[in-house]
Image 1 (spheres, rainbow, N blue to C red):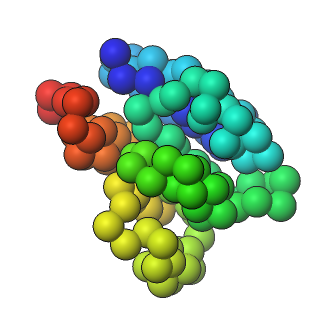
Image 2 (image 1 turned 135 degrees about the vertical axis):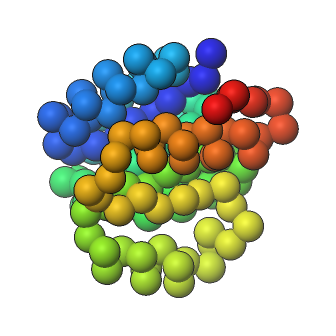
Length: 132
């Protein structure tokens, strides 16, 4: 079973993503509304995919949290979600993301797109495969 970690500060969206992904057969191993302990959560639960909201309340945004994870675990699949179209430029300019298994999803989006990107990201890992 594919394990997912979700960091989303809006509880309604966190629950929506969690319920949707559980219904698609994923296991949600950890959720949080801040990225203050993102590396500790990652190390404790060892998810197959990390979903990070861009704008988080604790002073660390999703790109910074992704960089923190990549610093120790460079092959981690990460999906950044943002309501801000302007994040595309910061995401595309982030040199540390070149050749990483990371994607950006801009809100609003259909939940099916969330599933498609989760499958694509996880399938790039050598020992994990999800059928579409």
